[in-house]
Length: 239
Image (cartoon, one colour):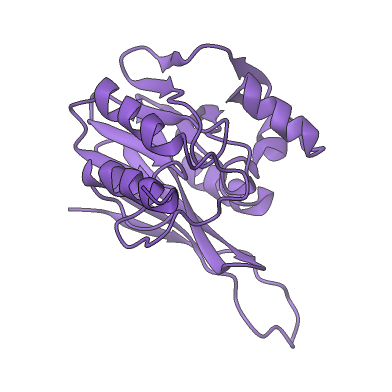
Protein backbone atom coordinates (compact mmCIF):
# COMPACT_ATOMS: atom_id res chain seq x y z
CA UNK A 1 0.00 0.00 0.00
CA UNK A 2 1.31 3.41 -0.89
CA UNK A 3 2.05 5.86 1.87
CA UNK A 4 1.24 9.42 0.86
CA UNK A 5 2.73 12.33 2.71
CA UNK A 6 1.90 15.96 2.04
CA UNK A 7 4.13 18.88 2.92
CA UNK A 8 2.43 22.25 2.79
CA UNK A 9 4.17 24.91 0.77
CA UNK A 10 4.92 28.30 2.17
CA UNK A 11 2.23 30.84 1.31
CA UNK A 12 2.61 34.56 0.88
CA UNK A 13 1.26 36.31 3.99
CA UNK A 14 -0.91 38.81 2.23
CA UNK A 15 -4.57 39.38 2.88
CA UNK A 16 -5.12 39.68 -0.85
CA UNK A 17 -3.53 36.39 -1.92
CA UNK A 18 -5.85 34.88 -4.51
CA UNK A 19 -4.43 31.38 -4.65
CA UNK A 20 -2.33 28.96 -2.66
CA UNK A 21 0.67 27.30 -4.24
CA UNK A 22 0.00 23.54 -4.49
CA UNK A 23 1.61 21.33 -1.91
CA UNK A 24 4.84 19.43 -2.36
CA UNK A 25 3.67 15.82 -2.47
CA UNK A 26 5.69 12.76 -1.51
CA UNK A 27 4.43 9.28 -2.36
CA UNK A 28 6.07 5.95 -1.54
CA UNK A 29 6.50 3.88 -4.71
CA UNK A 30 8.40 0.94 -3.21
CA UNK A 31 10.49 0.09 -0.17
CA UNK A 32 12.94 2.98 0.21
CA UNK A 33 11.81 4.73 -3.00
CA UNK A 34 9.68 7.89 -2.87
CA UNK A 35 8.32 10.13 -5.60
CA UNK A 36 8.31 13.87 -4.95
CA UNK A 37 6.07 16.16 -6.99
CA UNK A 38 6.48 19.94 -6.93
CA UNK A 39 4.47 22.57 -8.76
CA UNK A 40 5.04 25.79 -10.63
CA UNK A 41 2.79 28.05 -12.70
CA UNK A 42 4.18 28.43 -16.21
CA UNK A 43 3.21 30.93 -18.90
CA UNK A 44 2.57 28.29 -21.56
CA UNK A 45 1.23 25.28 -19.65
CA UNK A 46 -0.31 26.81 -16.53
CA UNK A 47 0.27 25.01 -13.22
CA UNK A 48 2.57 22.04 -13.85
CA UNK A 49 3.62 19.26 -11.50
CA UNK A 50 7.10 17.80 -11.92
CA UNK A 51 8.32 14.50 -10.51
CA UNK A 52 11.56 13.38 -8.96
CA UNK A 53 12.63 10.61 -6.61
CA UNK A 54 14.18 10.14 -3.20
CA UNK A 55 16.07 6.85 -2.92
CA UNK A 56 16.94 5.66 0.59
CA UNK A 57 19.91 3.40 1.23
CA UNK A 58 20.34 2.62 4.90
CA UNK A 59 20.28 6.01 6.59
CA UNK A 60 21.35 7.89 3.44
CA UNK A 61 19.06 9.61 0.96
CA UNK A 62 19.67 10.47 -2.70
CA UNK A 63 17.57 12.91 -4.71
CA UNK A 64 16.85 12.22 -8.38
CA UNK A 65 15.96 15.62 -9.87
CA UNK A 66 15.34 18.56 -7.58
CA UNK A 67 11.93 20.17 -7.20
CA UNK A 68 11.10 23.19 -9.39
CA UNK A 69 12.31 25.84 -6.95
CA UNK A 70 14.78 26.36 -4.15
CA UNK A 71 11.86 26.82 -1.76
CA UNK A 72 10.40 23.43 -2.71
CA UNK A 73 13.86 21.90 -2.46
CA UNK A 74 14.17 23.23 1.08
CA UNK A 75 10.84 21.61 1.93
CA UNK A 76 12.00 18.29 0.49
CA UNK A 77 15.17 18.43 2.55
CA UNK A 78 13.10 19.19 5.64
CA UNK A 79 11.13 16.00 5.02
CA UNK A 80 14.34 14.00 4.52
CA UNK A 81 15.64 15.29 7.84
CA UNK A 82 12.33 14.52 9.56
CA UNK A 83 12.86 10.90 8.50
CA UNK A 84 16.28 10.96 10.23
CA UNK A 85 18.06 10.53 6.92
CA UNK A 86 21.34 11.99 5.74
CA UNK A 87 21.16 13.62 2.29
CA UNK A 88 24.20 12.39 0.39
CA UNK A 89 23.77 13.59 -3.18
CA UNK A 90 21.43 14.61 -5.99
CA UNK A 91 21.37 13.66 -9.68
CA UNK A 92 20.07 16.11 -12.27
CA UNK A 93 18.59 14.53 -15.42
CA UNK A 94 18.61 17.63 -17.66
CA UNK A 95 19.09 21.37 -17.56
CA UNK A 96 15.45 22.53 -17.42
CA UNK A 97 14.31 24.08 -14.14
CA UNK A 98 11.84 21.29 -13.34
CA UNK A 99 14.86 19.03 -12.87
CA UNK A 100 17.59 21.43 -11.78
CA UNK A 101 15.93 24.35 -9.98
CA UNK A 102 17.26 23.29 -6.58
CA UNK A 103 20.95 23.06 -7.54
CA UNK A 104 21.95 26.39 -5.94
CA UNK A 105 20.29 25.46 -2.66
CA UNK A 106 21.98 22.04 -2.55
CA UNK A 107 25.36 23.43 -3.56
CA UNK A 108 25.10 26.01 -0.79
CA UNK A 109 24.53 23.17 1.69
CA UNK A 110 27.61 21.37 0.29
CA UNK A 111 25.45 18.45 -0.84
CA UNK A 112 27.04 16.76 -3.84
CA UNK A 113 25.13 17.46 -7.05
CA UNK A 114 25.73 15.39 -10.18
CA UNK A 115 24.98 16.27 -13.79
CA UNK A 116 26.54 15.42 -17.12
CA UNK A 117 29.12 17.69 -18.70
CA UNK A 118 26.55 18.52 -21.37
CA UNK A 119 23.98 19.53 -18.75
CA UNK A 120 26.50 21.76 -16.99
CA UNK A 121 27.41 23.41 -20.29
CA UNK A 122 23.74 24.12 -21.01
CA UNK A 123 23.23 25.47 -17.48
CA UNK A 124 26.25 27.72 -18.00
CA UNK A 125 24.83 28.99 -21.29
CA UNK A 126 21.70 30.01 -19.39
CA UNK A 127 23.80 31.76 -16.72
CA UNK A 128 22.53 29.29 -14.14
CA UNK A 129 24.45 27.47 -11.43
CA UNK A 130 26.11 24.19 -12.38
CA UNK A 131 26.33 20.93 -10.45
CA UNK A 132 29.36 20.44 -8.22
CA UNK A 133 30.24 17.10 -9.83
CA UNK A 134 30.20 16.06 -13.49
CA UNK A 135 29.27 12.76 -15.09
CA UNK A 136 31.47 12.09 -18.10
CA UNK A 137 30.39 8.55 -19.07
CA UNK A 138 27.22 7.31 -20.77
CA UNK A 139 26.71 4.80 -17.94
CA UNK A 140 27.58 5.83 -14.41
CA UNK A 141 26.87 4.09 -11.10
CA UNK A 142 26.19 6.64 -8.40
CA UNK A 143 25.74 3.81 -5.89
CA UNK A 144 26.97 0.36 -6.88
CA UNK A 145 24.16 -1.99 -7.95
CA UNK A 146 21.57 0.46 -6.65
CA UNK A 147 21.49 3.77 -8.60
CA UNK A 148 22.67 3.81 -12.22
CA UNK A 149 22.64 6.77 -14.60
CA UNK A 150 22.39 6.25 -18.37
CA UNK A 151 22.60 8.67 -21.27
CA UNK A 152 20.52 7.20 -24.12
CA UNK A 153 20.93 10.02 -26.61
CA UNK A 154 18.98 13.16 -27.34
CA UNK A 155 15.22 13.36 -26.88
CA UNK A 156 13.35 15.88 -24.75
CA UNK A 157 16.68 17.72 -24.60
CA UNK A 158 20.16 17.00 -25.92
CA UNK A 159 21.39 16.21 -22.42
CA UNK A 160 18.57 14.11 -20.94
CA UNK A 161 19.56 11.07 -18.89
CA UNK A 162 17.54 8.34 -17.16
CA UNK A 163 18.13 6.71 -13.77
CA UNK A 164 17.79 2.96 -13.22
CA UNK A 165 17.13 1.36 -9.83
CA UNK A 166 17.94 -2.32 -10.48
CA UNK A 167 16.87 -3.63 -7.07
CA UNK A 168 13.39 -2.20 -7.59
CA UNK A 169 13.24 -2.47 -11.41
CA UNK A 170 12.21 1.19 -11.46
CA UNK A 171 13.25 3.53 -14.27
CA UNK A 172 13.12 7.25 -13.65
CA UNK A 173 12.60 8.58 -17.15
CA UNK A 174 12.07 12.20 -16.20
CA UNK A 175 10.94 14.47 -19.02
CA UNK A 176 12.49 12.07 -21.53
CA UNK A 177 9.40 9.87 -21.01
CA UNK A 178 5.80 10.98 -21.53
CA UNK A 179 2.87 9.76 -19.44
CA UNK A 180 0.13 7.61 -20.95
CA UNK A 181 -2.30 10.52 -20.94
CA UNK A 182 0.07 12.71 -22.97
CA UNK A 183 -1.12 13.22 -26.53
CA UNK A 184 1.98 15.09 -27.65
CA UNK A 185 5.66 15.43 -26.80
CA UNK A 186 4.91 18.55 -24.77
CA UNK A 187 7.65 21.15 -24.61
CA UNK A 188 9.91 20.52 -27.61
CA UNK A 189 11.73 23.87 -27.57
CA UNK A 190 15.02 22.10 -26.84
CA UNK A 191 14.05 18.66 -28.17
CA UNK A 192 15.65 16.43 -30.78
CA UNK A 193 12.42 14.93 -32.10
CA UNK A 194 14.07 12.88 -34.83
CA UNK A 195 16.46 11.22 -32.37
CA UNK A 196 13.92 10.69 -29.57
CA UNK A 197 12.44 7.31 -30.67
CA UNK A 198 15.91 5.87 -31.27
CA UNK A 199 17.04 7.03 -27.84
CA UNK A 200 13.95 5.44 -26.27
CA UNK A 201 14.83 2.14 -27.94
CA UNK A 202 18.31 2.25 -26.42
CA UNK A 203 16.74 2.42 -22.98
CA UNK A 204 14.45 -0.54 -23.78
CA UNK A 205 17.43 -2.54 -25.02
CA UNK A 206 19.58 -1.72 -22.01
CA UNK A 207 16.96 -2.36 -19.33
CA UNK A 208 14.68 -5.23 -20.44
CA UNK A 209 13.54 -5.89 -16.85
CA UNK A 210 11.76 -2.56 -16.32
CA UNK A 211 8.57 -2.88 -14.27
CA UNK A 212 7.87 0.71 -13.21
CA UNK A 213 8.51 3.91 -15.16
CA UNK A 214 8.33 7.37 -13.58
CA UNK A 215 7.83 10.17 -16.12
CA UNK A 216 8.75 13.76 -15.41
CA UNK A 217 5.10 14.79 -15.56
CA UNK A 218 1.96 12.75 -15.03
CA UNK A 219 1.18 9.35 -13.59
CA UNK A 220 3.65 6.57 -12.92
CA UNK A 221 3.30 3.62 -15.31
CA UNK A 222 5.18 0.66 -16.71
CA UNK A 223 7.41 0.00 -19.71
CA UNK A 224 4.53 0.86 -22.06
CA UNK A 225 5.30 4.53 -21.39
CA UNK A 226 8.51 4.09 -23.36
CA UNK A 227 6.72 2.72 -26.41
CA UNK A 228 4.07 5.43 -26.06
CA UNK A 229 6.76 8.11 -26.08
CA UNK A 230 8.47 6.58 -29.09
CA UNK A 231 5.18 6.55 -31.02
CA UNK A 232 4.58 10.18 -30.16
CA UNK A 233 8.02 10.96 -31.55
CA UNK A 234 7.41 9.06 -34.76
CA UNK A 235 4.04 10.78 -35.13
CA UNK A 236 5.63 14.19 -34.62
CA UNK A 237 8.03 13.40 -37.47
CA UNK A 238 5.13 12.33 -39.66
CA UNK A 239 6.38 8.75 -39.95
